[in-house]
Length: 89
Image 1 (cartoon, rainbow, N blue to C red):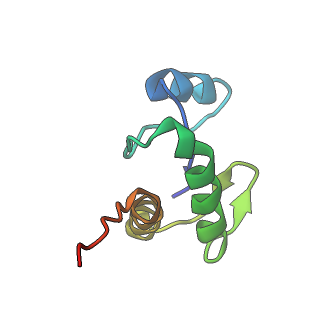
Image 2 (image 1 turned 60 degrees about the vertical axis):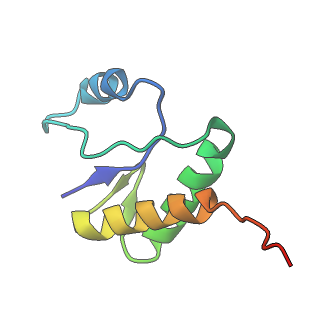
Image 3 (image 1 turned 45 degrees about the vertical axis):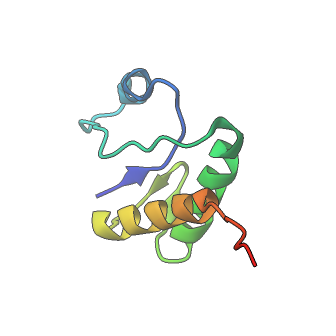
């Protein structure tokens, strides 16, 4: 399976635009809500982490295991969403 990791305020509309000219039926596997100020950083890091184990052709990662992709994306998001609370002494 090939997947595209990307950002969009309107994912359904984005899929429709990607579908044009693509012979394969495209669908959204999962969406994540992230703060707008972290979107670009998280997307870039997801691509970097996926590139370590999967080949990328253009905007698409080839022959991926969806479980791997989900774990990588979720852990990348979590690493940027951790809230540090100071301990009182």
